[in-house]
Amino acid sequence: MKRKIFVFLTILMLLTAFFISTVSSNTYMDLKTNPNTNKSNLEDDVPTWEENTLWTYRIDDFDLIFDETEGRSYELHIRTSDFKLKVASDVGSFYQTEFESEIELEIDINMDLYVDDTDPIIISLSFSRATFDGNIQFDKSTLGIERFEGNIKGIMKINSTSPINLQFLSSIPLPVNINLILDFDEPIVLVDFPISTDKTWGIPQVNLTIDGEIQSILLRIINIINNIAKIFGIDLIPPDLAQFLPIIDISDLLTLFNITDSVEILEMPEIFQCSSQKSISVEAGIYNTYNISIIEDIANIYYAPDEGVIVKMTGNFNEILPFLQNVNIELIDVGVDKDYS
Image (cartoon, rainbow, N blue to C red; front, side, top):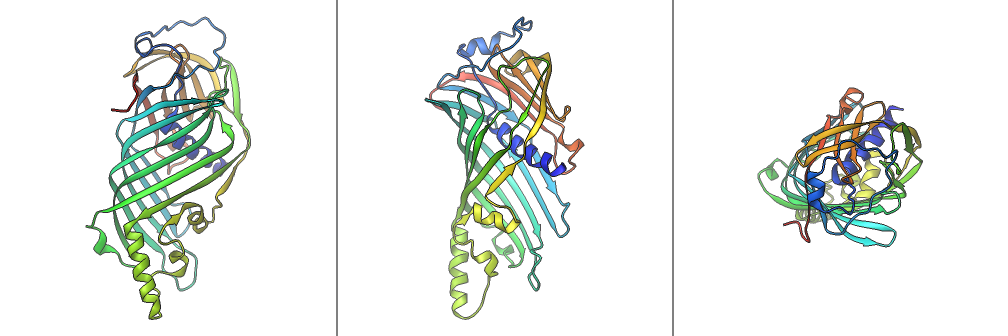
């Protein structure tokens, strides 16, 4: 059960932090200034999205520390600027949205490969001046997520002491491109429309396909050096790692962690519950919202039907999963523009 919750919350944070919003056909001035705190409707249906609508979110810093497996520990630290999401197009049965932000990443990995006579992987990566952009595809009838594609482009610094010492690279800035693709065979629905109080719902069994690649001039240089060394019978990079060079295929890389590129998310019935409405004040305005709790208030989503947008999300994940820090996301601006600038 704990693993099931971890898989779900990880996907929830990844996707919710990058996109959660739904906008009606009101103008953006109405969205910002009309709190309308007493609503008499018993339920609210799925809103209509308008092309070129732009939302801006603030996402708190996020840390993930996982060391429950003996001989393996992973740390991820993320710092973001304001996160901007725009409806790019209305394409028949789905909406195509685009997002962008600036981020800083720090990743620390200590991983025992459980292979005799093979040193563990000890590596630290840091990304600065990195842009994070991409697109998310939403099913129009449910606003469920069908596809996510994100790109990270920035400057990386690497420090590794095992299995090969790369400390000399720690002061050298290296450009890196990372592309990540998530495909769901069924839309992931976080707000079940029509939404009303005293309503519960869950997530059906879904198959998630993970793809993408990592490119860097460093990987090409390492591959060339390793291939030259192999001519003289020397393996500078263990064969289990060298097979991923020079362009790392993420689906292949997952096999190193004993994870397939097709992940089955088991059914989670009635993990969402909407039991009340609540007035919420965020930087973008004051809104009357549906208060949607996730797994008995581990996380809460606040959806404002009159404004057609989720204005806030809080996640108290640390209470049940100590390696996950709490998460807070807040709407700070709504507008209409044809470009992000």
